[in-house]
Image (cartoon, one colour):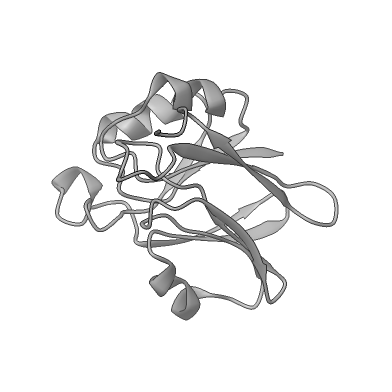
Length: 155
């Protein structure tokens, strides 16, 4: 199973992000969505699970979107939260993958037998941080993640 992972779109869904996520079996959005149109466009590619980010908190359209989501995909228990600071209190014993956004800093890290994945920001560039999405493959005995740059690095 191929899962597309995106975060911090802030109302901007780049054509490069759409292209990178095509072929995904599922899409996870780790918050700061920015507009309901983003979810609709992603849902045209694959089913979407999303959480609210801090910038979505007071938007009426986002009131039905949770701050924390536990999702089982292809036998893997995933915790989806916007801010890594909110992950520890929400962890369950069966959680094997933790997906966050917020920092705009892409990261793939293994800690305590769990995969921590931040796809970075796919929306407006922040400072000199890269613009990225991620892919997560849920098959075999261990999940595998990869970052996909959407734009050339600033320079």
